Length: 310
Image (cartoon, rainbow, N blue to C red; front, side, top):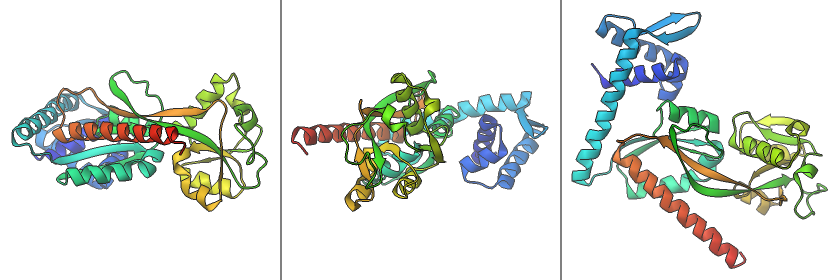
């Protein structure tokens, strides 16, 4: 019985969707269905009940899922044990990150990690914060990096970096020449917002509520799914928005966007999220250690720059 069949089965069992499992595994839906059918042929019983466009595990499927999870945990333990003897760091890592982090933080970090550990293959999945947390919950990725609070107490959540957010407006906007502006003032203008489930959106709504304001009064004229699309819409004069200061350097240099400080300042943590597993691939532990060191160096560099007046 091929391990791949079990991997496919576990993905379908956790997501309870052939379509979502196919997307997570980068397979076609017919290929996923074929793998499940072969596994059911092996056991000579159905593992899923299919009714009214929904699927659920049969009693046999629940048994198989329990054993499959134990099998994969033993594989991870075996790999870690052998690698602790050989000193080798290799394997495949499934990493997930919210959009801002994936586009602006991870490229340089993962490049440095690959230089140190060339035998580790990294697969990166990108989604909003809710999507990445769900993938960690369902054990579809080894590590998530997100930009908003995580409520699941069964997951390990660890801060890795603090990110400062600013208001962005087009040149010539009446707020462009002002000092720090309040959220009450921001809410007087057409606003371009990230989609539901985005960490950027959640942080904004939390700050509005903390200021004693009503988030329903935010004049959202557009909801967009990426920082790049929001920057383009602000440049086009369609509204204003609040984004990470680190992702607008190019536009500020070109003069197409103007950053405006917010009073009080808005900061948010970037967070590691992973399962509370006793055994993990050594590559996962090495990546966690590497990212902690990288973020610590970034924080120290930011603090030094602030001290020097840069």
